[in-house]
Amino acid sequence: MRENLRRPYLWLILAGCWMLLQDSYSLGSFAAGLILAGIVLAMLPAPVVDLIHIQRDRPYGLVGWFGRFARLVVYFLYEMLRANAQVSALVLRRRIRLQPGILAMPLKCTSPGQVTLLAMLITLTPGTVSVDVSPDEDVLYIHTIDAVNADETLRVPRRFEQMVMEVLG
Amino acid sequence: MNSLTLELVISFLLLAGSITVLVGAIGVIRFPDVYNRMHATSKNTTLGAISILLGATIWFSFEFGLTLKLLLALPFLFWTASAGAFMIGRAAHRTGTPMARTTVRDDLATKKGIHREGF
Image (cartoon, rainbow over all chains, first blue to last red):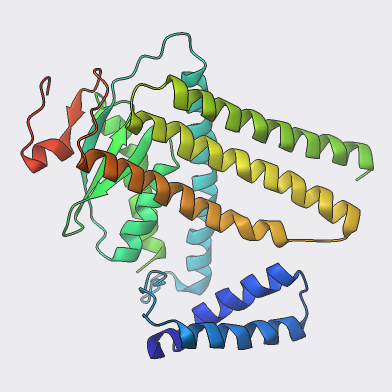
């Protein structure tokens, strides 16, 4: 619980959630949110796993970090629209022809936060759903609807991995 | 922005969202196995819900003053949809749920030393 209290971003996230829930964006509700955040964080029995572990080295500076984060979000939204179009087109076809399979993707990223975010992004992008992680977290197993052209299918996940590593440490 | 264009935008968002979710639901029926069905559920329901939420946010903001409450649901939706798909797929594979006959490759099974016919 001490570790939870020592992470400012947890305070800010909870206070932000409180302001959104209350639908008032004044300094007062922010203060109330901070107090509630303190209570919640102090009462949480286990430390929250350090998932949101923002790139400490920041080789590109703070502005560069935000730029990269924004690029990741935009690219993700684009890929998500593409994924929906692809699945919808497939569903509405008269005969569904698939060559599905599970591919192993060796991971370059190592921290739990990076792997989690990557698995999440992969699930929502074209043709891929992450299904399992190897016990030592160095291989991600991805179910895909086109397992024949494995390199082509894994192109987007690899690009995501690169971007995730730039954003999270 | 006048209210007609606003209503058109809202209607478009609501309709597009509903259709996306509907197509996802049809996909759940039509796809051959659990793993493929996860594709339809995770991707389509998320985008559909996002679209509907955006439409609702715009409408409520227009009628009752700015409200961002609904946007709070977005990040949770992202996390739960993908985490859910991940857990269902993983549980299915661990309990040996059969894959579609057209499956061409299963790296996860070969890793575990399971031999299935065909690959």
